[in-house]
Length: 306
Image (spheres, rainbow, N blue to C red):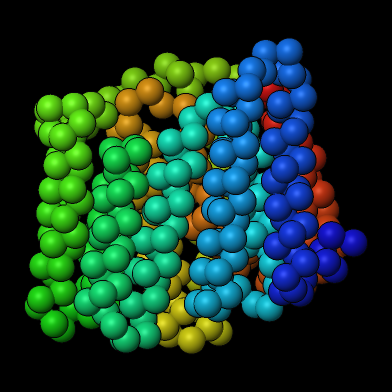
């Protein structure tokens, strides 16, 4: 039933994905109703709205760049991955940072059109710099931008310099604000590297890490056969997504205060790569079994995280 619904790309699927996202959010929040205060309620409403925005941007990127067949599986898997985030809903800065990272990836992937490339590079670097204000190591996604430049528009040397303009613009605006409001320069408090994985070394954390590792392994192993019939431009888009996935993992490994919520930075590339594998499964019973297993595990982990 679920396969038939999301096997076609329809606007209603986006609404259904948003409802699934809300359902996962409520599973966690209902268990903490007694602890809610008015200011906390407004903060949680802001988080769920930002989560909806994540889903809408993902849907737009997929449709605009034909990253999947005519289906909505990327949005569905992205939504299911989000179930693992709700136990850390207080990390609203990560949700906001991911919004800007998605906006940047949208611009980077669209470089393949060879239209308005300078503007797209400027915008992508700008969004990445803004994302770094909420989680500093999101700045690593500049690596993805430069890979996009190499792949699509490396022939024009000025393209290599455009990101520095965006960095300068954000730096000047942020520091001007800090000087006026707080009489000091902006402090990069999260600009440190740590290899302390203590916060992830719990049963729940281990299960989630192994789950994502399994999905990643399957996605990458079958990726070549999954995209062999796609156009060359789309193959390059998948290459950029693989780089984004690697950068997201690197971000998690070096960031301070590590927790499962940081996996949000790999939700989109992983959902897209896994969809490429999933939509090429020929036996419907295998698709259904795999999807229902993912839904069950997502629900179970959502309950545990609460």
